Length: 61
Image 1 (cartoon, helix red, strand yellow):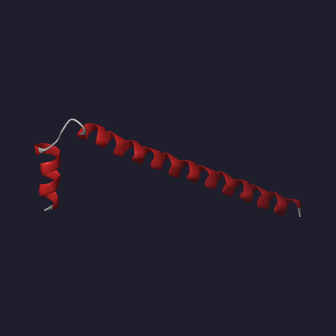
Image 2 (spheres, helix red, strand yellow):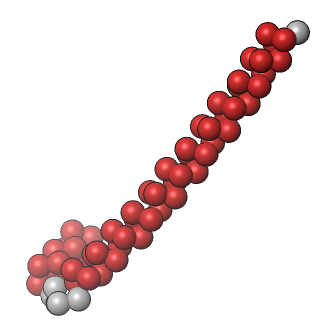
Image 3 (cartoon, helix red, strand yellow):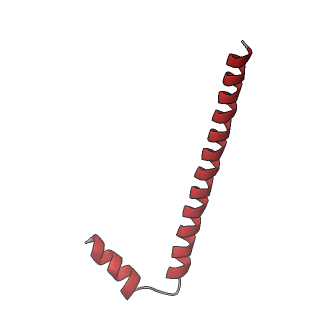
């Protein structure tokens, strides 16, 4: 049933708004992926800075 619905929507009843709808979904997906990458980058940078501070404390003592 799911495959039939997919086939019907994209190949039989695909109107002129279908590409715009697909592009909107991909834009939302792109924004989510960008936000996840940004958060991951911040986490890695903070983790590295904390590790550097701990290493410098160990060397100083």
